[in-house]
Length: 415
Image (cartoon, rainbow, N blue to C red):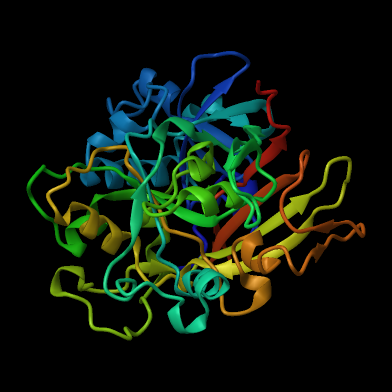
C-alpha cells in the first residue's frame, strides 16, 4: 500500500505520523470542553464526537469520553467508520466544507486516556529480554524458566494506575533488602526502570468458560498503543519470591494517547520466529500475527534540552504475539472484557543498543549509560523524562503512535 492522499496537506508528509492511512483513535478536549472521541489526521485532531452530534456520523458512542462504547460496536462498525472517514478526508472529497469546522490544531488540544482500562495483564514474552534477565540472575544455562518456550508467561497488573502519556510518575516507595542486611528496609526505589512494550487493546469480549482460538483472539483486538510498564527493580528483587511482580510494577503504567487500529497495521504483519519447542495446538497461528514497528526510547535529564536515544528495537522481535497471549489468557475460561489491556512484555533486540530496559542496557547497573551532555545513568533519577516512540514504515508514509512520555517526580514523604 502507498500513501493515501488527503485534502489536509500536512497528512501527505511522508515522514508525518498521521496520514490518511493511519486514522488512530483517541479522546480529546479543547479549551475546557467535555472530552470526546477523535482521530488524528496530519497536524489536526478531528472531532468525531462533534461530527456525530452534527449528524455526519452514525450513533457509534463517539460523544463519550472513552472509546469503550465505540469498541463495543464491533469490527463491522470499526471498518465502517474507517471507510466513512476515508470518504470525508480523501483528496478531492466534496465533504471538506462540512468536516473543516470539526478540525482542531493538535497543539491546542488536551489528550486524555483513550479508553477505560477494564483489566491490565503484562506478559514476559520477549525472548531476548527473558534471556538477558535470566542470565543476569541465574546464569546463561538457566536463563529461561522451564515453561518459557511453551507458554506466554504473564501476571495480572493494576488497571487503576494505567495513565496517558504526559502524566508525571511519582517514584515508588517500598520494601527492599540488600544481601548483607538481616531485615528489609522501607524507602524510595533506587533502581527505577522502564519497560519498552506494546499494548494490545481488547475491543470485543469473550465468554467465561469458553476458550478462543488465536484467529478469534486476533479479531477481538481493536488496536495497539505504546506502553511503558515502569518497574522498581530493587522492590521487585525482594518481593517476587515466589509469586512474581507486585508493588514493583503496580505504581504506574504509561500508554500513548492514540490507539492505532489493526486495519492501519495490516500491511506490516510479520511472522513470529521459528519455535525451538513446538507449541501446543491451541497456540497455533493461522498467519503472521506480529508487526514490523520500529521502536525507540529517549531519556532527557532534568534541566537539559537534548534527549539521548538509549534504545532502538522492533516489535517483530517478540516470541509470542498479542493474539497468542490473548488466546492463552482465555484458554482457562477466563472472561476477557472490552477495554482489557495486554502488555507485550519488554521488547529487546539481540544487540545491547536494542535492549528495552535500563536493567539490560546497564547490565544491572554495572555499565552506566552516557548521555549526550556527559551525564551518566544506571537507573532513572528524579526529574528524568523517558519517552517511547514508534512507527511502522510504509511506501512513502508512516503509521505513528504519538509519544508515550512520563517524568519522574520525587518519592513522597513517608512516616
